[in-house]
Each structure stands twice: as structure tokens, then as C-alpha cells.
Length: 626
Picture 1 (cartoon, rainbow, N blue to C red):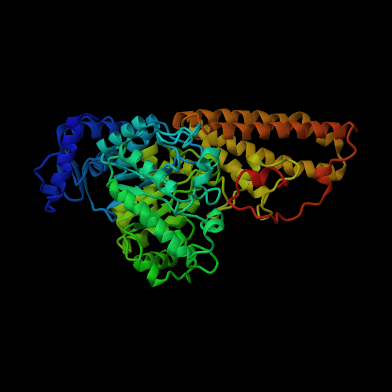
Picture 2 (picture 1 turned 90 degrees about the vertical axis):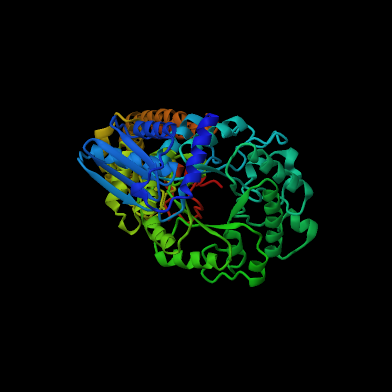
């Protein structure tokens, strides 16, 4: 983005602040270059060929009208203008001859929060495509979660081999986002979640636990200052997220050995205060995850403990930092209402971070996103929460590509712009228009899961063993097979699309393995060696073929979005799936030929899966060995 472009956009922002609310009669126009750029990118995103005249003025809210082949858009900021072009294109696609749309935002700032720290680091071209989607929906913030996937010159092991962003890459992304009216906000960690960095021996002295920094050590704050100094050189935003979540055991490991037991509330506040002071030095306005305060106030260490008690003395001494309440789990609006009220009592600005469920494995969890966020967003509006974020986590190696969930961002954008008038149909229509993929196909993606619960049977089948699958006994495999086959029928209509072809391979493999798991045990218990040999010689090679097709489709999808770094984890997993199936086929053939007297894996009667599955990650599905 050139200097003149920046100057034009800054002028628009200054004008916006002076608007008196006469949005449909505004005479101040957006700069011609801004209009051309935003129109081109949005229309390209949604495949709109409209070439008619469009007047774009600056005014409060958003107003779009169209008649006699001419359009007029009045918008309060550049991202709102982008939404205006999006709504115009959508209405024209619907064949409407006249349009009159007026909308006001429920949230001042809304946008996605995207994980770049669990393997998948989006490359610059993909992030630019993503920014265009964000702006087209009328969202005005994008937060990048980078634990250590950015460059600190003084720390060569920070982000080493992990696809870390260079300063030039971050500056390029920041400028592109600004050109679409999207504020790019850094989100980092300044206490916990730093295990990827702390694994290296040269920084061993910075550890309290394996994932937490050592509080009160001068070198810790030298590191944090180097973080903020590096980011200040790359981001134009004044806001920054400093993390601080899930610092389990902080103060109880090496810190305890050195200092003994201390008041952990006081320890946390002291650390936050020092980080906030460094933020101010670099002109950052910090926000942080709030959970550690609630966990320390809970007798059970739980975040969502409605009886958690944060002492008033702790609240009185809180540093000047906004509190980010994260919650993607509850379907009861009363829980969100209670928790937001509890945050308000802390006397600091409240940010809400909901979730677009991209972390359950391979495909977005559509039903769980809808059930949890429909409950949450209305409460956020009632409490007049200013900033609302749609987190997309990449837990367990970023198995799900974020673009597969772009339609679910519409839940946040439409609630922001339509408020109580937002319907499920509105969300579905906007998501389908944005992505070019029908809502039925996205619902088919969601069939990978069992309704609005976090039970990852599909993931367990992809990774799981044919002889002793460690998936929940609550899952009926016949029901899962039927659901997967129904999803495949829907996806067949769009199989020329890479995303649908990838999903189809997933369902084919999950259904095929589910059938094989059932049949192998049944035939073994019946003593049917011929049946087992047929599975070994025919069906397992077919499952291996499907796995290879899935791997190749997944790799193609990965490379279209992420840097190559991180793919090695998934490549190793696919190799393990194929290798173990080859081994099982060999064992079945040897058993059928009498070379093996028994299959020990099948001799024990299956018991309920009584192990703690934790976050239901890869390692819990592949073997009973711990």
C-alpha cells in the first residue's frame, strides 16, 4: 500500500468521526482510489461482474440502495464500505431490481482471531485472501495468535523451524489489512503457552514450568521487552493481546524452589503489571485472557466456576489492562450473562472471545459453533460488549483449514450488523454467498461430528487402530456410517471443488474403517479365517488407497493456505495410519494361514474407554500405550 493510499484512508477515518448521523444524505465521498480498491477486491471475492455506477459516501452505519442500474453506499468506515459492496453484490445475484438496506453495528469491533501457533502458519497470499473475506462481511479487526511464530532478532530459537513470520511479512499483512479497513492486532504470550520456545536448552533458564516463564527474573522481562519491541516495528495497531491464559502451576515449580510459596494472585498481578508497563513504553494498549484470575479464585481451579471469588483487594490492584473472557462451550445464555457480569465487576474493559470450532479434527464443528454462539452473542449485545472475537484454534496440528469454516464467520458478522433481526437463514445465505459453497455442503462437513457435542468419533476413526479402536463407547458406529454416507451424497454434487473432495475422502475413510473394525472382530470371534483373509487382501488395501488420496488432498489444501512448516506432523500421522494398516493386513493374512496362532489384540473383550481422553488429541486414539 502506497503513501497516498494511507493518507486517503486516514482522511476517511477522520471524516467518519465527525459524521452527524445523516447516513443517507452524506455528501462526503470516500477517496476514489479507496472505492476502486475495495470494490475490486470484494467483487472478485464473491464473483460479481457488476460494472454500473456506484456512489460511495461517508456516514454513520451502513446504507445501501440500488435502482435504475445505479447504486449508492454510505458507510462509516472502510470495512463497512466493503460490506456495502458485498450486500449489493448479493442482492444483485438474487435478481433484485431495487435495494434499500440500512444497518447499524451492535459491536464497535468484531472479527476473527486466528491461531498461527499450532503448526499451521498462514502464508501472506492466503492471509490477504482471508482479509478480503473478513472485510466483505463488514468485520474490522483480525487478530493473529503467534506464541513464538514471529521474529525476535535477539532470540534465534524463537520460532525456529516453525514458519515464523519475518518483519517484512508482518508489515505487508498489516498494510494490506489496513487498506481494507481491518485492524491487524498481534496476540502473543507473555507467561504461559511458550513450551515450543522453552524446549530449547539455551533458554532453559527462563522456565518456571515447561510452558511458563519464570516471574520476577530480569531476563524474563528482557525477553518480553524484545517481543514488544519487535512487534511495534511491524504492527500499526495500538492494541495488543498479551495472553496470560492457562498458566497452570505457575509459581509452583522452579519459582517455588527458589522463592517458596507465595500468594499467587499477588504473583500474577505483579507480573501483569510489569508487562503492562513495558506495553506502555512501546505505545501498546494491552488486553489479556482473564481465566487465571477466575481459576485462582476457584476452589477447583475451574474458569467457569460460578462460585469463584476474586478478592476485592486483587481487583483494586489490577493493572490497566482489558479483560478477555473466552468461552466456546456453553449453550445456556445464563452462563454467559453471569460471566460477563463477573468480568464487568473487575472494573476493566471487557472483550468477548467466542469460537468458530475448527479444533475438533479435520472439519469445522458446525453444530457446536451455532449452538454455543447463538447463546453468547445476544448476551454480548445486551451487555454492550464493545469488542467481539471469533477464535479459530488449531489445536493438535491445525488439522482443519480455516477457510473451511469461513461461512461460520457470518454468525458473528450478521449478529453484529443485524442484531436481534439476524436469523439462521440470514447467516446461511451470507456464508454461502461469501464462499460459493451451499449451506447444505457446510452442514455435510458438520456431519463429521455427533450433533452439538464435542465427541470426536470421526477423528478417532481416521487415526484409530483397526484392532482396538479407542473411541467412545457412546458412539454407535452404524449411525456414524449412515451419517458419513449421507454427507458423501451431498458432497458428490460439488466434488470438483477441492474442499468437498477432501471432505469426501475423509468420510469415505472414516466409514470404511468403521465397517472394517466391526467386521474384523466379528469374523475373528466366529473363527472365520477366510473372511479375515478377504479383508486383508481387499478391503484394507482399499482403505490404504483412500488414505493416500486423503493425504494428498490435505497436503494440497495445506500448501494453498499455510507455510510448509508444520505439515511434517500431519505427514507423519498419515504415514503411521498407512503403516499400521499394512501391519494389520499382514497379521490377518498370517493368522489366516496358520502362521499366527492368535491375534492378541482381539483376544480381550473390549471394555468401555475409561482413560481420560483430555482434549481428544491424536495420541489418545492410536494406542493404549501411555
